[in-house]
Length: 179
Image 1 (tube, rainbow, N blue to C red):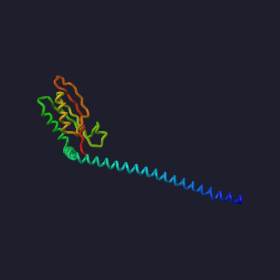
Image 2 (tube, rainbow, N blue to C red):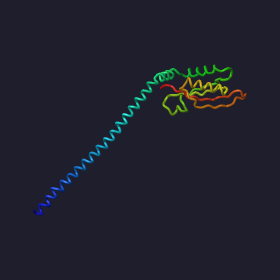
Image 3 (tube, rainbow, N blue to C red):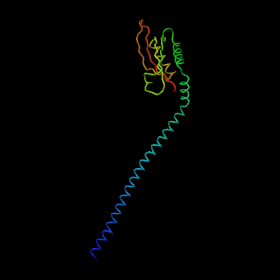
Image 4 (spheres, rainbow, N blue to C red):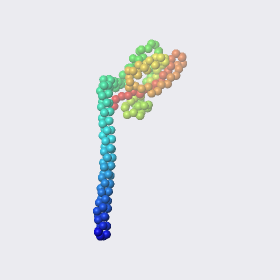
């Protein structure tokens, strides 16, 4: 056979088809890896979405289980006012004899300088002064924190009374309210 034809047959019969096959294989490989990466990303998003749906359903179940407590909390938050807050303290005062616990003054602020400052939930602050025994103040605070979970003691300063029979308590409370 002629040398001239052998070279043409080799180029057109072997080299060019081999190059075309290599190019097609490269394109197929890059497309499948690209599709595989897109699939993995979409699978992650899908799995994350399902996990969030499950977590949301778990939270909804917990809310449903605590619906009665949340209803009580909501009712309490809607009915508590500054006046009822002070009434609770008067009731607590009545549980003690004589001068075991006496409230001397209170002063309201329409905002909170404590923890309420960094939270979007509306809160008021009240500064209250008491003269009491240590035991009476502990019991009164425990009772108030039980009755009013929306109240937080931000500050308390204790100084001895001149007579030595009582302690002066200077307190600051944050009282949370509904928006």
